[in-house]
Image (cartoon, rainbow, N blue to C red; front, side, top):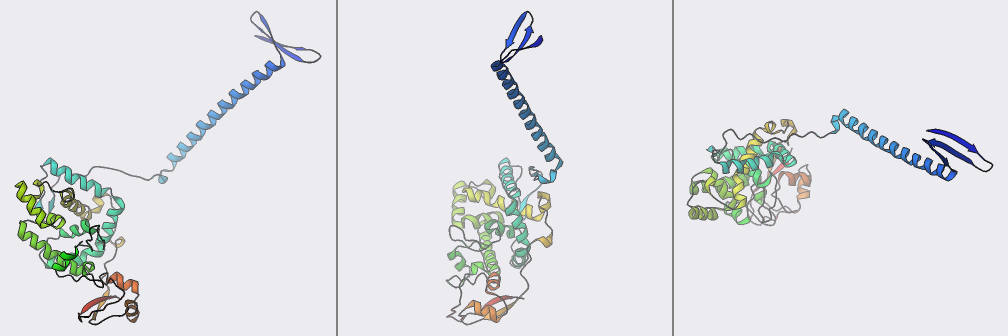
Length: 332
């Protein structure tokens, strides 16, 4: 193919020989040809720059692994014995294995909540463990308190309150004072003692601790009815409501994780947990208190700290018409 130019008075004509043909390209044709080539060049350049940008981003990502949130999701090892309060879990039953596996996985990968459980156990377990031991209740029941309330003074949709989640009538039955100024469901020591009495009654009624835990969740009357209808006497053989069917498995899962957090990927040193509130003195109050804020100031603390150490004082004052004696904790 040969090119040549022809100059005229008014225009330039580009000509080229294509085999045996002589072709004349006039100005408009030249402009169109150049425009097409320019468009093609622009598209090629844009594509090149796009590929280069992605390659650069990929190289940057690979070079900066610290910017990537690491996560390893693995199944929990079920090939070992499990128990609750010394009573074995029948792991040879596939239904039992799957139900326990569900709760272990949920609580293992429920990161923030489980980490808070681990932190909180350092704060509350020392007091709970002592009272459980004094009352002959297996130590595993401290994990039931975690399942009930996450070791927080919560209020359930049904009105159960405190770490042990007592309903009002049940709390009063077991000796807790509940009124507009005092609610001992929020009193850690007294509520734990009441829970011990509650559980001992269920142990006597149902014969084992696993069923006692189930009864704590659903109520003894309902559990007894299901046992009678289903002709079963073992928690793992009963078909209970959805919540109670999961309940004991959840307690066991919480136990496994909190006893060995690192085995489940939770790295926490003891000093990173919440400290126990054991630095306090007790002041006896046997009369009315017009204002707890004034009371706090008189004892060199704050209203906030007074309520943190005594969450069972639910009002701003104490009438105490009956002249009861209350022991109020004052942080030191």
